[in-house]
Image (cartoon, one colour):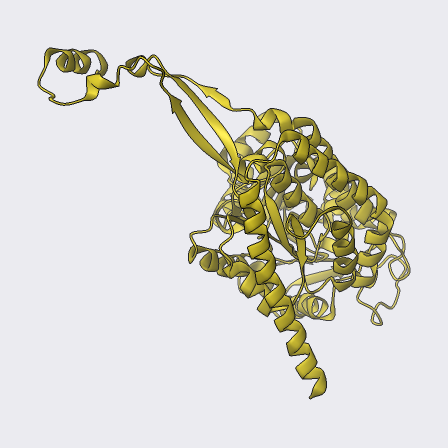
Length: 480
């Protein structure tokens, strides 16, 4: 009973701290509502240097949280991509901040029009567990380049990473500029209920609905980076080896625990078995062993591992053909590493047909012609990512023109997410809004329209009384 009381006290303390920090950040922003380019770039440079300094500690902490997370995956997918994003913001922030000149209609001359970009204020960033470094730093970079202050709610499933990340941020920022919030679901609920000037949430579609509902009470705008079932369409004309290798890399990274991982594969019916064989060969080459292989990441926790094995059990009971890829035939029952499974004969009543997989299970669906594959994708909620494999540019454009998704990689997987000079965001069930690069700066800025008049003004032509010859002339020339 004492332990439970202590736990409740800890939760209450974090919630009180959260609310106090929000008030402090709002007050601090009021005292400096338009940080200079020098200030913003200084913050970004400090963030870059501290990330590089802490890279090994961050990777080690994530490894502990996952009970086995590839250090190279952390360096490639989280540290390197974060540093690249910071570098772009350092280079471009001054340019992004400049007012944008706009044209003035002849009727309103002489005048000047411009759009000025102001910081929104205090933004809330909600981070998932799968890429906790990249998905905290990416939004933070956008928020800082736009001149905001930020509160970051970390996942309760990455406690070791949270501790290191919190120490890292505290080394360069006062809490009234950037602060880290931990805590369980109760703290997350209170976090979303704060009247932030913007909230960016990365996570599941189900939780995203709750975040949006909570934000609506304060009319807080939201950017939702969700997930869904991202398809990969394999053309009849591409060598199966090429497609299988690239899909295998994208599906195996972080053991499939990636929001833009290929969720299912559409393959020409006549080449289904060829693809399965090529995929098995590609995985075996990349990961000849699993159990003690530091390159292959474990499933984050028991709950997720049980969910994935439950999907397999349900599918098998309903007639799916399962092919496990375990190159060294190792016993993986003692840990949370899950051998990849290729799933064939998927049926609509299987749970895996509807639920985002978020793990190393790969359903294969055969099709007779490309339009049939496109129709299959379009009959389902719009995904966060779509992948097309085929070297014919006409077919590429046909797929691009006739499908909707948050982003696309052609003849590759995941890599569109790493392009800092392109927006990243979902559509429909996979999210709303964008960030990365210039789009991130815009997301966390208020684009304020400014119309300037000097001493001479034609505005009096719009004053009543309205029945005069000048007014009739204006209507004749401009309403046509």
